[in-house]
Length: 148
Image (cartoon, rainbow, N blue to C red; front, side, top):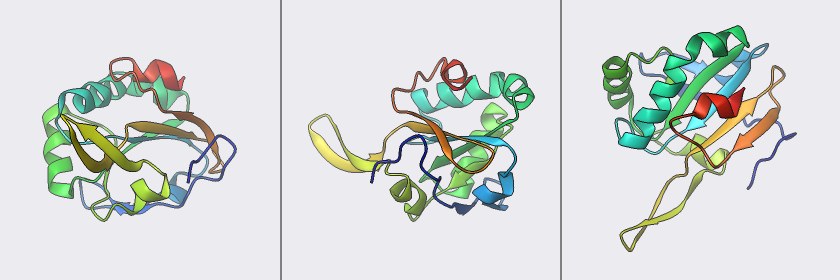
């Protein structure tokens, strides 16, 4: 399933790094930058999260709520968020439901080895829960510029 601009965003229900149960519907009335990333505290994922952190004020002024999603657990997310002072929720998708619903759990390969993993992708979702933009070529160091 390949989601595109104009499609309704699939529902989400997951716990964040603080154990709070969050739903995408909790953010109706705001735009949501739902960003999927492979793994906590790795170079590319850290660069992306820190870029979003550093531009949090600009995103908030544009009514954009950032939400990160990976298949790491809450404990891993908590360490990552504390280490880099991340001001937004990181959802723990340990059963891969969200990554599958959004079509970003795909076959990947590295060093000749094939495996399933999260493909770095961001969905900008409008105030009514409709996908406005899908960013598949994520620039981890300048990601905010791709959103606004």
